[in-house]
Length: 276
Ligand SMILES: Nc1nc2c(ncn2[C@@H]2O[C@H](COP(=O)(O)OP(=O)(O)OP(=O)(O)O)[C@@H](O)[C@H]2O)c(=O)[nH]1
Ligand SMILES: [Mg+2]
Ligand SMILES: [Zn+2]
Image (tube, rainbow, N blue to C red; front, side):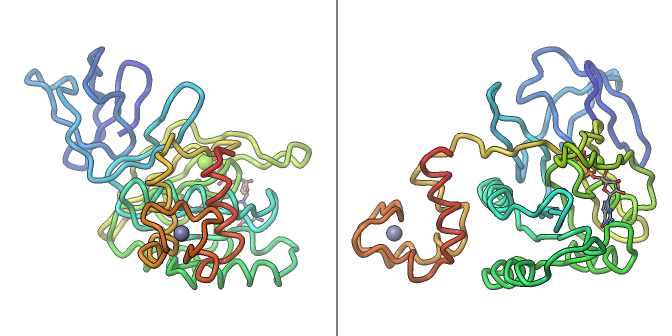
């Protein structure tokens, strides 16, 4: 499903079809991965079906659904160019947990010069809490094969900042050419290349990939403070051991989080709790 102004590209029995989007469509606009009901005349979208999951991001103009019905979010982060930022990674992971998806991490640009020591530390931190972490080069079929193993026939949405290699990896996974563009060295943050987020079935295997448009900064949607810990699986797991019910894990007496959670992850959580 690709939405362009008043119409959406849909996949019907493996063929792409443009369908009209009626104004005021309930729950709309549809997002990549949405399942829709086709109108009686066959030319439009009649309804968006209830979603099994949602990857949402926040923003000044309200939330946006980046992908619907994905089983798995793959957070794509470049090791360098742009520099890896674990705080951002934690926001994506929280968005996946809160949106009802499993998550994994792919670290790209392993071919570019970098210090391996902090990268190994990041890798073991996330593997320690159960997220698969793969490292490699987006255009390398060896990495793609390992990503396919993690996807394991499911629908996976690739999420991450602009210029990290989502579209390059999508092309390696699916053989379908996706627009990519070089990261501007000066801006470092990269240009926004992908403008047509869409679901692409994986060739010769069950499952599909949703390549999304990267952003410069990713914000979580507004989340109730008491719900935020659900976005951090290892905090949620120990919360029942905190002395106080409804503990915010923010320096309270008898909080179980500091002993069980890495300082970096706890810091990410607390920053989100304080709205930064
Ligand atoms: N050296 C190297 N370059 C890479 C790698 N992955 C991606 N690139 C390059 O980084 C640039 C951006 O890659 P894209 O695949 O367009 O990134 P994207 O995440 O889709 O970016 P947006 O669509 O803006 O969100 C391109 O020039 C790619 O060739 C990698 O593993 N190694
Ligand atoms: Mg892209
Ligand atoms: Zn606590």
